[in-house]
Image (cartoon, rainbow over the protein chains, first blue to last red):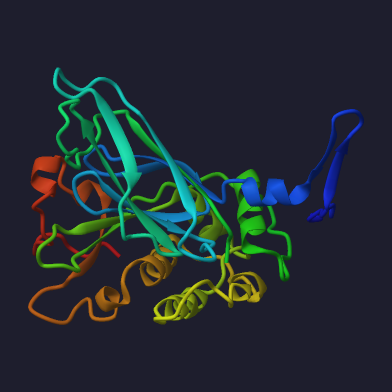
Length: 139
Length: 155
């Protein structure tokens, strides 16, 4: 099977102008993962992820197959969950400070109780999901 | 089973994109449990299904020593960015692994070396490979859970 390669520095539309292909290369997510923290973690789908680490209640570390070039890459996070109880309004996932390495990054998840207090790391309920997409330069 | 293209000097990310498009994910039943901090509960590593598919397929992943080299670079105090990323892309990919070999590779890639190099030294093992069904079923127990004697090696 051939592995085709098209090399182009610019893409040009017939009427709408041109765009440098480096925007597409630099701006694409280099890693993404969809997983659950329901009691025992499991991965739904991913790209450029080798494993996840269940580090305790609401703590997950994602490891990359193709490491990032430096530790300054970014992450967008999201969650999909059902309302858990009368006092737990939303589940949030965020990068855990100080854990960004080129080959891995830890994330914390927890319920926002809408009380102004700090969010306590906590697992999600059954059937819910965490999402992370990473953008940056690869090694 | 589809044949892996002969990747020579192909960027690792492009190899992963090929695998994503052509291989079905493989959910492994194995879990790696380890302790690296006496003040924290045991940690559980879960293999990624798409990564496992690459490992079983062969011809995609670099040898594990490449990651050790990059890790050494990153541990230097003046580290800013990787300058030897070519090791990931230019080192010839390794052949197909069994699921058990893939787990061993993943341990050496994603578990701290301080754990897997001395996993059986001391009073009790600080790392075990087990099946998912052997893990605690509720988080209440899991958060204070430690490796116990009845958690036997499964591989």
